[in-house]
Amino acid sequence: DVKVTQSSRYLVKRTGEKVFLECVQDMDHENMFWYRQDPGLGLRLIYFSYDVKMKEKGDIPEGYSVSREKKERFSLILESASTNQTSMYLCASSFEYRSKRQPQHFGDGTRLSIL
Amino acid sequence: AQTVTQSQPEMSVQEAETVTLSCTYDTSENNYYLFWYKQPPSRQMILVIRQEAYKQQNATENRFSVNFQKAAKSFSLKISDSQLGDTAMYFCAFMKLTRGNTGKLIFGQGTTLQVKP
Image (cartoon, rainbow over all chains, first blue to last red; front, side):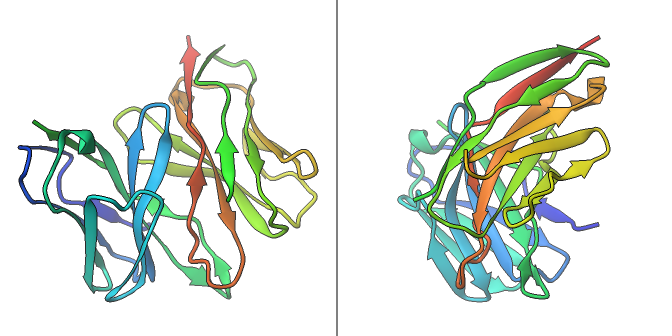
């Protein structure tokens, strides 16, 4: 089974702090994604990466950055945390098999509170 | 741009009965995938079922089946013989299949389903 591991289930930080959320997958997937999940809004894509050192903005990238130095690891960075970034953050990974994109596999999520 | 709409924020069903969750989407694409994902309380999101748009036959996975109406852009999920373990939030999601797309998903707002004993 695919394993997508997020470093923390719960995290509490203060306004203005630099926050790192880590995600690791163990299946050599090319694609990795960061979403935030908010009630009534579903999941919204923040950033994604299709290869090492490659990244693309999703639908809501403002206030976030990402890093992918190794294929298995994709980090989400809140440069200066604000209270409106309090949310559940989900990491996912996927791959292509015979030119067909496969479903995304998700981590358990990190519930981040910014005080 | 593509959008996915789930108009039922919450639903409930008695154990062993059948329930249908609605999903509509908007796209100008002809080739795409549609998915239903399940997120149990405090647990990981998992894939329930997938439908490829070029296939006319509705996908089925055990007690889960879809009613895919391409012209109407509708993709509903039917859960038969509901079980307590089906209690979860369910998300409908859309994925384009055009070149250069890395498999980004566009999600609906989610439907919270409670199965009652």
